[in-house]
Image 1 (cartoon, rainbow, N blue to C red):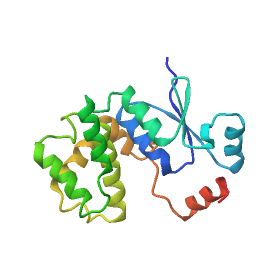
Image 2: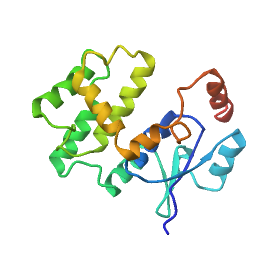
Image 3: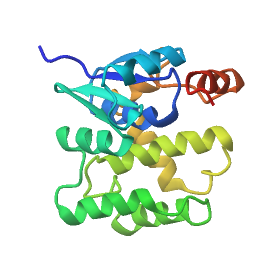
Length: 195
């Protein structure tokens, strides 16, 4: 049996959450090793596990990958969650990099879905663009649930992706998905990173 990927990070969303989402959507079970003290972080740094001295770090396929974007790219390639060809990859990237403000961001995605009349953002097939967008929709909803209300296609996408068995499981209580950061959590972060 192949070993489950092992995620090294805090017991919080931060830079690991989009990695958790992507693995969950791909149906990949993973283990987590939480950093609970500055010493935990030092130990990883000292045993040479962290290139660039950074977390998140993911052990996968015998490698120790760091940097969120590199980890996401690896997972997207491995589980075929990129668009099918170069143009689709570019589209997927573009879909992720749109301006982050309600008046430009959500309308842009709504327009993409409307323009091609398909169920997904890119190439009518689930890709990381859909997963990252839905992660963002959940996050924005936690901040202000009214923001998405005037975007019926985005709401439908969120429902569609959320109902995929792999994602549905990730959204259940007791999954590796992390709650929104609270004061206690921020204190932990400051302690671990000695901020």
